[in-house]
Length: 435
Ligand code: SAJ
Image 1: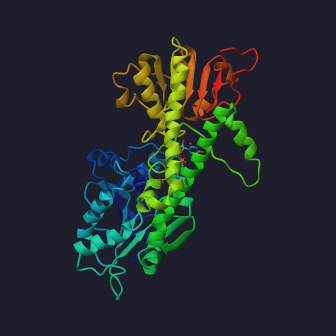
Image 2: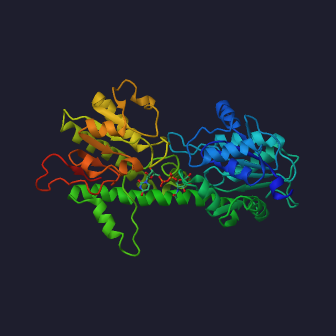
Image 3: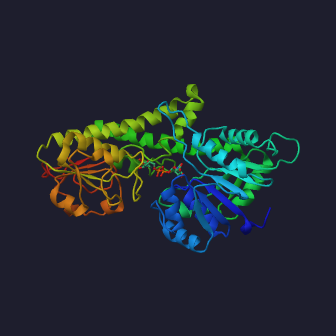
């Protein structure tokens, strides 16, 4: 192996994970080629700019491109290490679709040489890393593949899942611990040496299948726990209780840590990955499957509650606060807030206004509904109903004085001081519906 900082690295897929990863590897001194199928993404990065929003990523990419350490292209080229970070969506039946991963491996195969390392980072069903190895073996019969030869293999194949939180990607990419799963222990050791170049967290060697499952388990764990909070919110509603108060008190127990209810679970990881486990063992995953159902059901519950509130006040103008899938990011994929707001816009038309500081214009599904995007100040001046769908900091800090007289449906618990229904003297105004 060349000395660490002399490695040529090719990162396939320049999305939310691939681009920050490429930039951090480049910052460590390696020469990095980032590959993406979208020409406009490649052009943007080669200008030293970025096509996604992530804290501090713009400065980092600008710097490494300017220093000649990061360049982008639509074609894979020879390198010492290949990192695959492409999407793994699921189909209508929740079956994982690994076609992008296999296409990436196919694009690497022709340039692969003795000594190279191929690492998969994309969230993948158990067994995918072995499938990559099998595919490479088929396309390059001249190379000895790990686990298929008694001799020293020519290439290393490993799985190393990312586990960074959008909004904190650069920090977590550097400091989080990593599971490094090799097809063989030797593969794990080789891949681990590569991650040591840019990861400060502990790198733990394991086998590829365990690392694949670990990634799925982490997100399923979170989904199940959020489902518990969401179920509690629906039960509390029925019982006339404030779920936030109940959780706040329960969390004073030293071994209880209930997560926060919301309008449902969004993003492209937590709402997706549990299905990969369910698909792999459909008979044995009632809890994980039910949690998915509870979290999806919470979106429908939120829509029904918002519709009831809006219908009960036929002249009121409505502001939906937020479209992003969670706080302080510009990611609207699989977002419950977006689904709720769009459904309300289709039903109530021009009565619905949307406030989303992270969006320039409304997504396509709002076309023709009559709903418009307004800023927060206008919403606070003109709308009688506020539906808080995302806990962006800008929304959190709206003082009570500016919302005390509003009808508020706070799905995120951002305004605990909002007057509650039934409190003497408040009448119809100042209503706060619990989540
Ligand atoms: N949410 C709640 N209540 C909570 C926490 C989250 O309703 O108490 C909702 C959020 O609003 C959002 C969704 O869940 O809609 C997911 O948000 P998140 O912040 O929990 O997670 P993601 O999707 O941004 O990132 C997750 C992370 N996984 C875990 O925390 C186990 C991250 O570390 C992974 O790298 C990422 O998935 C991924 O790429 O897999």
